[in-house]
Length: 314
Ligand SMILES: [Zn+2]
Image 1 (spheres, rainbow, N blue to C red):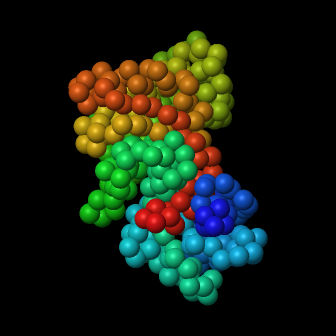
Image 2 (cartoon, rainbow, N blue to C red; image 1 turned 45 degrees about the vertical axis):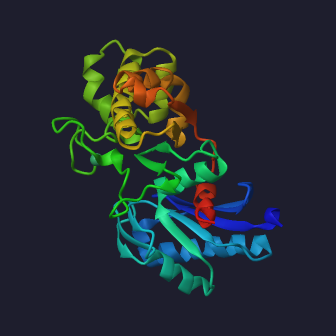
């Protein structure tokens, strides 16, 4: 009867909310997307989340085990409250209870930070299957980490463990959108690459990329593929900053595996490897990195990763 078990996953992003109906084996049986429109306020966003869930519950046609939600920002998984999500402009939103009230259902609802949901998705369905110790890095518009250590999702006192994207590695470095300087995210993310482009553009007058107007992250990746010196400088900088963060993860959690995911992470994976691996090894002792492996994320739907939260402790 295991094949019959289902869950609904929800990934709340700044621009869209992704929904998936997922089997216990990680198969995505149905998907849905709705715009987030955070400017309409939290109640309107919660109405849309409830509507998306209702749609997939109707498609399931039978009871599901629960609902898993990945939410950006500072989330308390015990209370289901999102205390702060800058991109959504949310403060103390009782996500779990407000959703259950709207759905009028008695179902388990698991709420975690989105990067933790991503890590659990990899653990249950993807590159982290069967692993007790790994670190997941999600690289997209922003970036973040999640870790499973000793067979448990690492949470921390205030559930902010592995919030490494906004640890400053250089107080004199690039200004991050969080207000700190030298954060990993300020270099290793779509926002970071674009900031780097404007910072270094004048240093590469012969670069075709430097001469372009309205440059996008896609333009930077394309230019890197053509050997553009400015684009390669930006990726080299990203690799160096990411290596510093991953080397700290080695020292802290001694993972056997790094899983690189997120849209930009997957797009960059082949270009970053094997240089990134070499840099991490150069910054750590052989006794701690001898068993290290790198892999790309295998869970392509962020909502499917969120659904895995339902079965995390089962
Ligand atoms: Zn920051």
